[in-house]
Length: 284
Image (tube, rainbow, N blue to C red):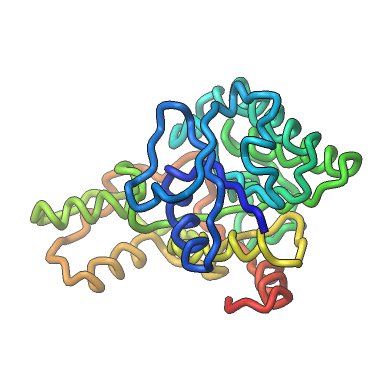
């Protein structure tokens, strides 16, 4: 199977590459002209162009793939920027439509749990979307556009709605990287929010495995949550990291306010994900 990947230099993209290589696959990587892959990936075939200004033969340059894992998205982690729907959304749709019109048969796109908006509790894929910030709105709009396109263009669309991820290579602003850095510095305390919010966290390497199996397997679940399915308080999560790594650091709770663009308690149902993975005959 011929596989292409965007967003390869990002946090999740590198984990996806690692799992593809472990599985014996060598994807074609799309890079911006000014981007570079780590030395360990240099044996992979690369196409260079900007998603915002793709060449007419973009599909051919990507090796006429059987499936594209599309992880690229600009402007993060600023979820409130209008860039997401003003610039990113139209550019993303034009690029993906170009590939579909050229013959791309299967497209997997990374979505976000922020498409659900301010809904609380366990969220499954049948819930109405109600995004509460520009990033979630733009992602949800792209999903709708691609679903309409799929009805007439004859391609399979898998929309992988990601919940919260953590792991090696994450952005410096992320909670996981911040607590790791504080521990390495020998800080005595770590400032954070009250930590009572319930979230759905998944290690990035596991999320990458799920994405690859969804992309390469025969199941076509459509929109699917990629999550753990288990709520955990942020405080308990951080305390677990501290215990696991034997760090000597105390939590200073309540310093930062809770985000105003997400509810206090929400997590994903992974029933649909588990069914797809089981259908593909892969370990969950």
